[in-house]
Length: 219
Image (cartoon, rainbow, N blue to C red; front, side, top):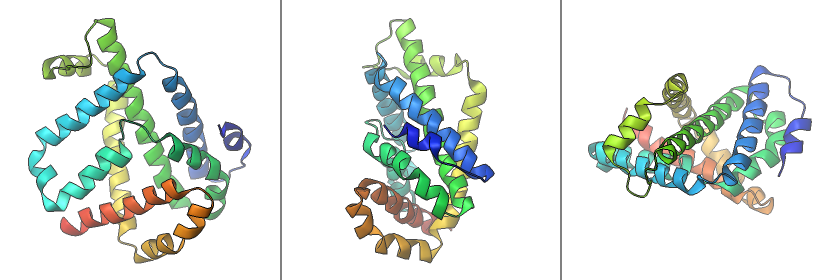
């Protein structure tokens, strides 16, 4: 919807260039995925993986110090139903982002965009693997999932995914300790809602509040 705005926005720093490139890639991928015949399969796979993570890490998921952060990871960052309106708003405000945000924040934002793109791309690969073998995604077995995972043609991308999780998480940890960030978010709620960016503002506030709870309890 806002691809032309991404294309025509001039950027100068390396991080701004990276964010622009990734937003364009993610924009195009979202259009492809929306029209893909296996769209519902990718959503079921995402749901299955989220539930599997809760089960295999039940001790951490139920721990007061980790539950909030993990729930945010599974519902806001890795949302099976998608966040189309929020993602469109990111494209829409990109010109202002590169103009007003510090360069290091653009780098962190780029990491989040890349992580989302990589994760959804890998989910689509899994859906195609199941479809090629006529395996339904309504009842995925752990054995079939492990077989599909090992058969991935993009193991280097999966390694990149793990690196992004660790690196971006560390960067977010540093930001949530900055009290001025929380203050800025609180005073910007009204203008954000007036500009129809309430969902994006809530996402940023959620990152700060929920990762803040997580990091305070683990240090």
